[in-house]
Length: 543
Image 1 (spheres, one colour):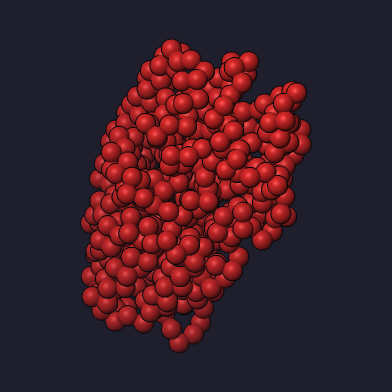
Image 2 (tube, rainbow, N blue to C red):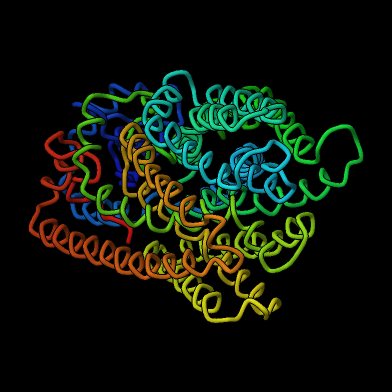
C-alpha cells in the first residue's frame, strides 16, 4: 500500500514542534489532505491546511522519505515504535486471526464434507447415483461465484463481523438440514444455499484482516487465516473418522453433518461479539494502542480508515478498469483447481489406493498438514523477502513434482503413491493466500480492495472443472485428472511469472517518471486527485 509517512525535525518554528509532537501523517482522501495525530488537542483540519506549506529546506528530506515509504509501506523508526508495532501485531494475532481462522475452518468443513460422507456410503444409503457428489459440487458454484461481489458489498455495509457471524449461522443451519435429506434434488438445493451464504466469506474476511496489518505484514496473516482451509480437509477427516464410528440410530454421515453444522452455528453467534469492526474499536486494546493502530494503517495505505466501510462509484469503476486484477484472475483460476478439487475429493483418491472409508479419511490428514505447514512457511518467506510471485512459483513447482510422481508411479505401489499425494498437497495451497495478499497490498484504497478481492474469488469457478475432473469413472488411479492438473499448473507458472515481469517493468517506468519530478511535484502527486491509489507515480507495486 502507498504511504505518505515522513518526519519533520524540530526547529524554531511552532509548527515544526507541533507536527513532531503530534506524529503527523498526511493521507489522501477525496480532495482533502487528512491528518492523523496522537495528540487529540491538535485539530486535524488546521494541520491539513498547514501541511500544504512545506519548508523548502526540508524538500529533499521529504522527497527521500516519500519515495522510501511508498516502496516499503509502514516501517517503524524508533525503538518505541518498533515495540508498539510488534505489540499490536501480537494482539491482533491472538484476538483476530485465530477466531477468523476457526470460522473459516468450519466454512471449509461444511463446504467439503460431502466428500467425506461419500466414503461412508452416503449416496448408496439415499439411493443416489455415484455422480451425485460431483453434480452437487458443481451446483454449489452457481450461487457461490456470482454472488461474491454482492455479498461482499453487503458485508461492508452492515459491518464485516456481523456479516461473517450471520453467514456462519446460516450455513450451519443448512448443514444440519443436510443430515436429513432424502433425494438428490434436496442435496442440490441445500448446496445452492450453502454456496450463497459462503460466497462472500473469504473476500470479506481477507479485506477485514487487511484493516489491521501493514502491507508487508499481511501475507503471513492471510496465510494463517487460509491455513484453516488448508487443514479443513484433514480436520474433517478426523471428525469423519470419529462420526463414522458412532454406534447410534443414524448413519455415520448424518452424525458428521450434525456435528459440523452445530459448531458452525455456535461460532456464528459469537462472531459479532468477539471481532472488532476496526483497529480503532478493538476492545482488547488501550486507548493509546487504538490510536497508534489507526495511525500506522493511515501511514501504510495513505487512506483515511474512517471511510473504509464505504464503497463509492469511483471504487467500482476503478475496480473494473484494474488491469492487474484481470491479469491475475486467470492465474488464480488455474491454481484454485488443486485446493477446490482435493478438499472435496482427496478422501476418495486415498480410498482408491485400497483403504476403507474410515481409514481413507484418517489418512487424508497428513497431506493436509503438509500443505498447511508449507503455506505458512512460504507466506512467512514472502513477507520476509517482500516477494509474492517468486514464492507462488516455488509452491507450484512443488505441486508439479507431486503430480509427476502421481502419474508415473504404479497404483500397486501404495506407499509411494501416498507419499506423492503428500508432496502434491504440500504445494497446493501456497498460491491462493499469496495471490490474495499480492492483490490486497497492491490496492491501497479500502473500498476498491474489497471489490478486487471479491472479483478475484471468481477463481472458484475452477471448482466446476475440478468436480467434473474427479468423476468416479476415472478412479481409482485418477490418471486423467492428474495429467490435466499437471498441464494447468505449468501454465500457471507462465502466468504468474508474466505478472511479476509486467509489474517490475511498470515500477521501473514509474521510477523514471519520479526521477524527473521536483520535491513540490512529488508532494502534489501525493495529495492530488489527478491519479488515485496505485495509479500514483509514487506507489510502487509489490512483485
